[in-house]
Image: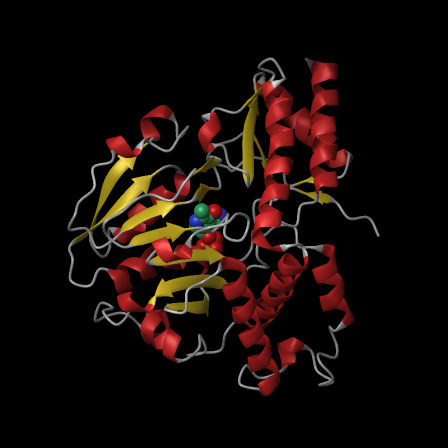
Length: 360
Ligand code: PMP
């Protein structure tokens, strides 16, 4: 079996062990004689699996008891709307930190429900940083403050969670479970699974129950966090197979030593690539200020953009996939999520060095 080195931004690499386990029990899950996909979400077998996934998640992230853990559908994009629908609670505006493409999309979506205020933006400098907190213009009457912990396209990551006097909402789509996060400082944290946690189809929402119960009147029941919490995220048929694979991946993260150990490995992986970029004498360029460089997504350009197609072709020939930058940003992007092994990253760093030697 030839497995590629997969640097895709999402859906992304899954741990081989997880795929093997799923493969082994594909036709017969837990002695039922049925695939997980074929059993009812109301069955004891599935409910046991769902409860275990929640327990593992709570333990891995040290989620306080007052938080509800939801396994929803609609991706992180749905949260761009679901957050204001549920958390405005009579307020007319919410604050947003604009640090890249994804926070921009969150702001656009919120306009349907309120007047989102951009409390700070790094757009003018090409999204190369998180603006310093001293420059944020926070509204003490905002419904919440929203930030994107890791900007998947621009490769910008917060060095620390913002300080906020209002409930803090975090889009952790590309970083949840790749580094420690203090859930207790947040009102709500969300992430779609398809980067560090599992396959597409499942979105994890951790929400302080004190914020629940005030959804806008037009909110459909399936989008009301309070209703979903009461129904254990099974108000309608959930994405059972994605939930199952997410459960296996959570178990794998525990076996790998938990979030702190995974974080150290992720820092080492990212360090390898940033060192090669910085040592390249400008052959490779990453514009993000070092304090805000992402450990999850490493975007870079070749100083001579005409070499990019050759770079991508040669990388693919060497078994490295998913390196093309996001359509809106161009260039190259290596996503180094939890399941991307150090061997893959070392191979990429070596490849970059060799490509530079030949073309530099
Ligand atoms: N937020 C961030 C930071 C993301 O990276 C993405 C997806 N790349 C999204 C939101 C949207 O996620 P989805 O495609 O699951 O809607």
